[in-house]
Image 1 (cartoon, one colour):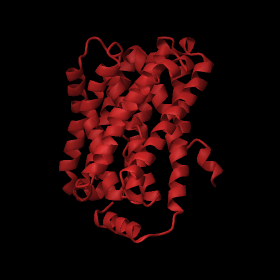
Image 2: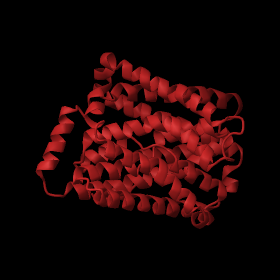
Image 3: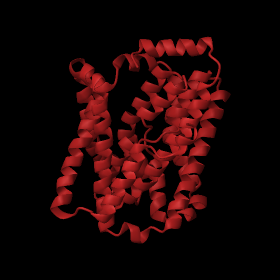
Length: 338
């Protein structure tokens, strides 16, 4: 069972198949325009359903834990970019300059919601705080990520779009549907909760669509001619180094600042994640279509790596003895409706 944790999950296999399909049968011209429209609609539906799923009670239950949230946000939006920039002279030779642009892009992305919460639950961490922190990170990322891209990668974005224009487009495509879904939660929340499989299909389907359109454009521009096999192996090593540094830092600082074990778990799993769901659509807005496929490739590899490593960590945390604090945390998450 433990060994299976190191094997790719079904979604990762679908991502690989999507990249292969785009490599052999890329769309272009009118077909590409059609897929762009379908992809935009699918992503809007995705964030609409996530807004309807988010419990206001969970937000209120976790929002008061400001020290934890500040630490998670600092790790996500300050530590990650610093690590990417500082280590660039050492790590960039392991990949290509264009691939390392994708590495820096993943460093400025918000935290993921689903896996951070799922691993926190598996490890018996502070669930209300995890829900609040991960959700807030996603919303902050809509504004913060384009600004950080301009700071960390001033020459990489589309020259026709400045940071404010990118923020406006991302808010229109992601934040507006999210808020609409959340405000309609009293009417559709139960339906979304009872049909969780539908949300999963929209989750995965929208990402697969974005990856397909992005890689189609990249293949038309000759992505595989520009990308040596050694660079892919180097990318796996670069992702592992960055993830290891962040996991070690979040664990150390959480203990150094006196957080209890449940809060430490939340900090580790929320602070070390990068969102594929937010990152892929934002890349399509921030970067030219021909570059987006190569830009999101490091994110796809990092995503799978973080899932495998954090699954093992969550199991290790879950094996610790029960304590009164842990019981209170579980009870608190039950009250919050998560």
